[in-house]
Length: 400
Image 1: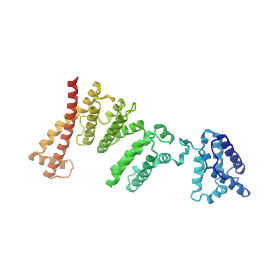
Image 2: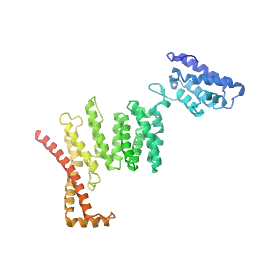
Image 3: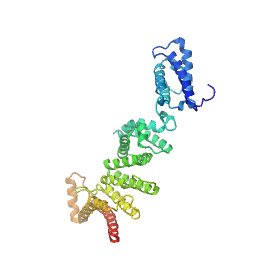
């Protein structure tokens, strides 16, 4: 075929394709009727069809014309025999299955935005493979999970080059959903926490952040909330809260209308991390509490001029005070007192024996002293942040 027919007149393009399809249906009535004497004609028609893939006609969305899509499906079913193999000399790099898939996706599958068939889009390839990648990442065998991570490492940067935020409708177009994105992100977290290679753990968190950034704000909001709520690893929850803080800061700087991260909707996420209940272990939850306290102080400081979120509203202040500030402060005072007492010489021996009794390895008094001082220092840092929050609240009261 000489030149490239332009798709500027879709009616003419449809007629051209229709003529070729009718000829193909004559030559291939059904998959069992592939006669040797028809092979030259079969080869010619198939070459014509394949040539059409190389010109702009292949960008026409035949999904809007079901009758043509039906004809093409018929061709795909009926050309799996000897006639279809005639294309091998022209496209040796493609298997028969690959050529069939390319024909199908080019003419029958839905097209996305720029009229590229979905099969050639990074996002489609990734999301159609996401379930398999998720299973690999979640596998307990290191050699399997690392393979899953290698695939994720390949796709996420490719999606970044598309320079487009993925909306909920985009996910649906690609056969995905917020729930599937959450499962993929959780499998990345599983990989990070189980991998013994520090460099891969760090790269895993970088790819998790990159994946979150691919999503549009509303999808990002739901994903971050679900991860903070469900993640069992406290240190990682602390990092996710810090990512949330960055999202709030970025949304506030944009200042372009309503925002999930810079508006009242943000309160929906508070129960996932700005809470503390009696019986919670301060030291186990230290990373979450420290990042949560810093995040809340950051919100109060930013909202002193313009309170778009509503953190300075009396009802909001009471809620955070009841569910977070007072219970954490009370538990801190008690824990700091206990740690201070444990530093006394006569208490160190009792602590060592108590640890052995509960199944922990025996520690020397110097090791106990070092651990106690480190824990005490961390809790005092948290106490200092809470004191600064209290000062902000008190200062606001005096100005009223």
